[in-house]
Amino acid sequence: MIQNPFKEAIPVLELIEEAGFEAYFVGGSVRDHLLGRSIADVDIATSALPEEMKRIFPKTADVGIEHGTILVHHGGNHYEVTTFRSEADYTDFRRPDSVSFIRSLKEDLQRRDFTMNAMAMDKDGQIIDPFAGKEAIDRKMIVTVGNPDERFGEDALRMLRAVRFQSQLSFSIEQQTYESLAANSHLLNNIAVERKLVEFEKLMMGPARVEAIQLLANSGMSQFLPGLKRKNGHLMSFSSHVTSELELAELWVLLLFDLGLSGKEIDSFLREWKLPVQKIKRYIQIHSWLLYRMENDWDLKSIYKAGLDKAISAEKVFGTLHALVNNPEGLIKLFDMLPIKNRQQLVVSGNDVMAWMDKQPGPWLRVTLDEIEQAVIYGKVPNEKEKIKEWLNASNQKSGKN
Ligand code: ATP
Ligand code: MG
Image (cartoon, rainbow, N blue to C red; front, side, top):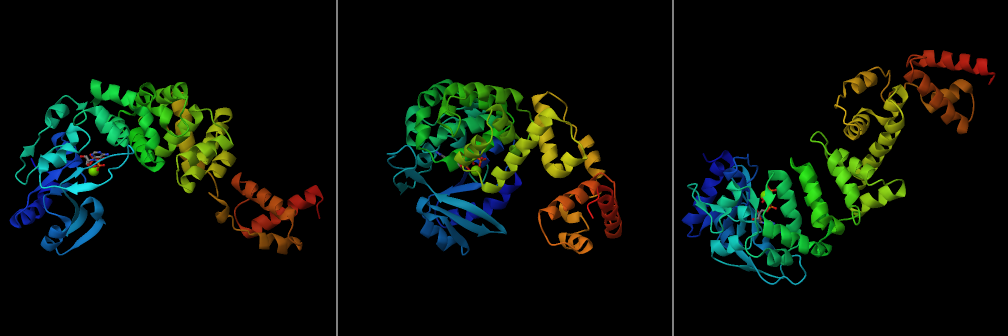
């Protein structure tokens, strides 16, 4: 049965055909449809040129017009529609030097990376499959369209895409394709880190992630990924610790741990991957709570300082390293016991304390606030202004501070 996203897009194909051009569903959506996977968005390829498309559809946006892609708004949805194209010379193992628009579907399919991604489907659900993509899907095989050395030579990112699809679909990489990938892995040097990151993260999140990580190491590809040169042993332990429960942040933290990085090395590793600063900060924090957890159990103070989310993440990584069952219940209970969950919830401010003590600000203020915070966390004093004031007076008298 044709899935809904296709059904809704059929009028788009019809309108293009009525104007005298060809139009098909292509790429990942056709592959996933044949695999019985749910599909998110459909890609459309057409013999119409972008200018011709704009005459057919009143509402379009130029999203990648130089590559022949425009965004068509229709029936409350939008679709990426790309003119059939062949990709001319590749001189730097990256992107084609120029794009030529063509009128032939087959040539368009021929420029695509893997046979499973090189099929088209018309509006009646007929599959156009000149490169035996269907057979590859049945055999769960990732096979390049044509000679793998040539195809990886044209665009080295395809090698990482192969491993990422292996991870996402639990497919195998066909022998010749695999050998080429191992022989050409150095070409990854030509690929921008940002593009590597996208594929690497998808690969780490796929159901066959363990095999994918091992494949990166065994094929030699990891030698050409940021911070992973000569780290195959570490990558192998990483793959042995990875579980299906871990989310992206936790996988990065586990990787940091298995690489044995510390301090500044962690920061430069994550920067080398060009991760956003916010994420770097978060991963570093979770990693340091993991190190804490290797030596200590959680208590009120540590869970308060870490915050529940980071504590749970650190605990999940800790659990995976010790083959423990993930059970965040204990942490949630502990966190629930905290009278305040963060500093903002403390009812007294620095101004209150200065007024009560009739003193000018100074280092003493921070120390005192920390003491109050600690006392509230441990339930020694309720989080109420008057009570805190009394408690502060009493403890100052005891220590003879006043
Ligand atoms: P996903 O489900 O992750 O989106 P996808 O197969 O749709 O997978 P996209 O990156 O969205 O992948 O690309 C859409 C299609 O464009 C692919 O199916 C493939 O036919 C083609 N394609 C994408 N990247 C390349 C590439 N580097 N070389 C050749 N063809 C490519
Ligand atoms: Mg896609």
